Structure formats: structure tokens, C-alpha cells
Image 1 (cartoon, rainbow, N blue to C red):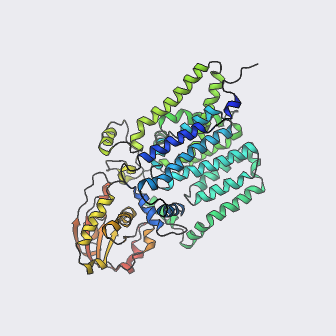
Image 2: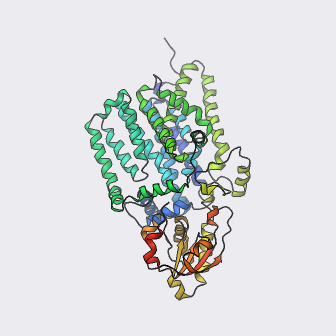
Image 3: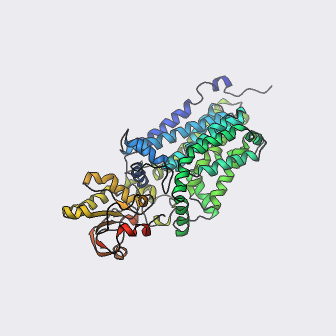
Amino acid sequence: MPEAPATSSKENSRFPLLVPILIAAIYFLAHMTTATRYGYFRDALYYLACSEHLAWGYVDQPPLIALMGWVTRHTFGVSLPALLLWPALAGAARIVLTAAIARELGANKFGTALAAALVATPAVWYVNDHQFAMNAFEPLFWTGCAFAIARVIRTDNSKWWIAFCAIAGLGLENKYSIAAFAFFLLAGLLLTPQRRLLFTPWIFAGGFVALLFFLPNLLWNIQHHWPFLELMRNIRASGRDVVLSPGAFLWQQILMMTPATMPFWLAGLYFYFSDEGRKFRAFGWAFIFTIGFFLLAHGKNYYSAPVYPLVLVAGALATEHLLEKRLNRSPRVQIAFRMAVFAWLFIGIALLLPAVLPVLHIDAYLRYQAHLPFGVPKSEHNQDQAILPQHYADEFGWEDMVARVAAVYHSLTPEEQSRAAIFANNYGEASAVDFFGSRYGLPKAICTHQNYFLWGPRNYTGDIVIRIGTKPEDARDYYESVSVAATLDNAYAMPYERNPILLCRHRKKNLQTDWPEIKNWD
């Protein structure tokens, strides 16, 4: 009779999520202790601006992030720790939820703890979970959908379709990409014997719940003639995004997920297509479909990141099975093996951590970056000349820019100030003025970029304009008088944020009538 595994099932039933919760707590603290290292991220400022204009939709995103900004503004405030509390919590919840999926797939304590460690290791999530932005919450919704599917498969309880569809519907209010993932999960089920689980009234009831969640944003898009689709067409036509070859895309997947995790997620993918993992093979198909979709669609490298918990959790289970089958008779070897696995993952992320989490002061980071054996991947061509990766560069220079705008504004007479518009070239500049401007006695900015376009020019005609983000030679096409009023010289900011601040007078066309013609959705 074969010897039982070293860890009994009774022992495994006690506090199975204790270690994952500890890992999640460490991950959370890592983000909170670095929250104030650099500054406010461009997109966070924009979402706070959106939170002052609550709506059921926006040009470039669904409404959930703006609502979260509104809640934060009216509860904890808008300090960096208050804003980054939410993505850090989302990252911690993703770790615990992934460990819960491991339990559903049959993992014991080691497999559950390893699943948590694996999902806490990828470099991409340190970037995303350090930003008050949609990307931090997307993996939580995707993993929630996967957990509901795992429950359907394991328990044969069709009522879990309600949870699956509710999570997907709420996820659509965060980012639309969850629709593709949900579809790929269902397609994966169709390719397996578990397809029988789809034929139940509960999935139709769940679909109705998802529609109820999504309906307000759907109606908003219809009312506004689908601005998000127009935006996507414009981005594609502009050639702004870096188009990766299949080889470059796959290499960046490895780098993004931290090379130390690659053996585990490859083992996880193999597990799903082995006899051992055939019950949950739909997850393997969903992973393949998702990676293939973003590869063929030339998506940015991080678009596929939320699907990796599916294969990381299976990799943890496969590793645990290997431990029990091959090393079962030697407890000392088991302990050494377990310690080696966790050490491997810790070293793997520790070597990359300064590149994805601001643990170093900026000068120390630049010295670190100079010694990296690879370049930090760039997803847009406008990042080519930046000395910092965009996730750091977009945290520098905002308040200094606003202070210099304020100096120009207050150099005007009171009568001129009443007519002067602060006109930004993009939403980052505009939202920085809106966020920091109250400290300097500035009015809100106007801008034709993204959702700022829908908020309009207010009562400004263009008679006096303080222009941000535009080169003088470009501004002269629109104004009778253009002068450089201040310069910006923050070397750490993105290069296109170093254009001078211009004082422009007598716009050739009235802003009120010309506004629809200068819309900038890209």
C-alpha cells in the first residue's frame, strides 16, 4: 500500500489561506510604504478630474474608476496613500483569490501557498498596483470570473453562473476587455466535456444580471455615438502604439511576468492538457485564446497579464503533485525543495523590483537602470526619448508645471485673468491644473483631449489663452500673438511635457464655434 503524503489532509484543512493572506499582507505593505516615493501618476489625476463629472461613461473608459475616485475624494481624501490604498488592496485580494482557486483545483497547503507566491511575483502587477487606474482592478475581475467557473466545475452547482455573470458585468464597468476573457472561458468550456454545464437556465439568468450591470454604460455609449470605438480607430490609425512581432510579444510576456515564473506557468499550461488536469482544461484553452487574441490584435504587452493567474495556479498544483509523487519518501528533501522554490521566486522579483516599484530614490534608480541587461519595454513610440520608463516618468513634473502656469496667470491684470483660459494639450496637463490649481488660485483647465472635450470650452472665447504642451510654431497657426511665458525643464518627465508655457492672444477662430473641429481623441 503506498505511503501517504507527508502532509495529511486533516492538517491541510486547517487555515489553508493563512500563508496566502500573509503573502498578500506583505505585498500590500510593499505598495503602501512606497506610495509617496515619487508623485501622482498622470492617469490618476485624470480619473480624479472625471470624478468631478460623474457620468455613466467616458470617452476612454467605463465609469467605475471615476466613481471610485469620487468615493475616495469624499472619504479618505486624495493623498497618494489614500489613492494607492485601492489598487494595493486589489492586488492583495487577487493573491488570496488565486489561492482560493488553487483550493478549488485540489491544492493542499503547499500548493495554495505557492499559488499565492507565484501571483505575487510578476513584475507587471507591481507597476499596475502602484497606480490608481483600471489596470489594477482588471485582474481581480478576471480572477473572480475564473473562481466562479472553478466552483461550477467542482461543485456542479449551476447557480455559480449568477456570480460569474455578475462579476463580468461589473468588470465591464471597469474595462471592456473582460468581455473577451469571459467569451474565451465559455469557448474553452465548449471544447471540453464540461460543456454540459453551459446548458442551464442559470446562465441565462446570469446573463440578465450582467446586462443590468452594463446597461447604463451601454446606453451612454449609444447616446454619445460610441466614442470609445472612435478612439480605438484613431489610435490604430495614428501608429502611436509599438507594434510587436510575435517573437517580441512573447519575449515581453516572459519579462512582464518575471522570468522566474515561466517554468511554473508553462507547467500549468501543460497540466491543463494532461490527464491530471482535464477537468479544468477550459482554463488552458482560455489562456491560449487570450494570448493569441492579443498577439494577433497587436495589443500592448500588459493587456494579457490578467489571464496568467489561470496558469500560475495550475503550475503551483503541478509542482505540489511533483513533490508528493517524486519526493514523498524524504521529508527533508521536501522541505529543501519547498524552500528552494520560494527562494527562486523571491530572488527573481527582488532583482527586478526597482524597475517596477519605486523602492529607490530616482538617482539610485537611474544607476540601477543603466546596469540592466535589457531595456524596459516601451508600449508607445512617444516614450522613445524618455530617460525613465513611462510608469515612472508620468509621476514627475506636474506640480512644478502648475506652479509655472500660475506665475504666468498671476502676471495678468485681474480683468485679463477673468478672460484667460488655461488650455492644455492633453488630459494629463489639464488634470494636473485641475488637481493642483486650487493651491495657486487657478481656474479649471480646458482641453480637447479625451473626455475633456465633452466638458467643453466653458465661456472662453480664446481671446487670452495660457497654452500648455504646444510648441510655439504650432500655436501660431491659431493665434495672432504667441510668446513664451515660461519654460519647463524637468528632465524626468516625458519629453513632450517639456514644451514651454505660452501666452497666446486673439485666437483666429472663436473657441465656442471651433471646439467641435479641434476634438482630440487619440
